[in-house]
Image (cartoon, rainbow, N blue to C red):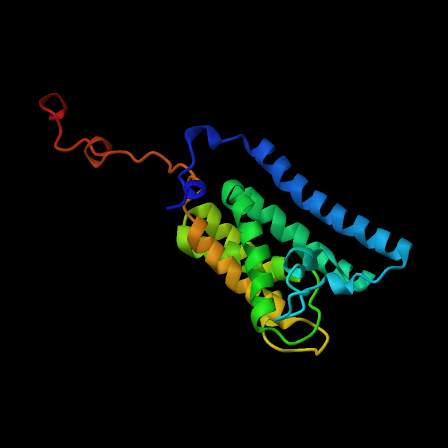
Length: 222
């Protein structure tokens, strides 16, 4: 096991309010950065498409880092914003330690998969990360099986499950490859990190011998 995958220490527990505030802060910050970049791109009237992943080319290799920050239109960014917010908040609330590692894993592995295997075209947008978070949260629920994990998996499936259709070829202008490799990366991240966050404490169980006062003592017999 790698050092950053070690079990959480007792000091990692925190009050639900603090946990929720942190889960809200980082996705909101991420979305704000994407919108500020889009505003700057529109204001400067520059073409940022070359910052995308161009498969199997040296010039397209840096796009693994930069492609999720680039969107080709306001509608493209607007379509990705709710899923990035919702999935980011749920993932960070459920698994604050694991998700901090899962996001870079999904970011890098999805981009690498696109660079190695995708169609020869520029691939951009944060949807690889959002599809990765979708499959990550669902996989975490299947692997951990504690009540919180299962609830989060069901909520994500019901609210965002329709996104899963994006991992197969559809419209020609949409990078299903980014979606597909994001999903694969999300499952890999869940498999690697499922034990990083402590499980919620179980309610105390009453010992069977104490729960039943049988046989009755001599004083109770009449």
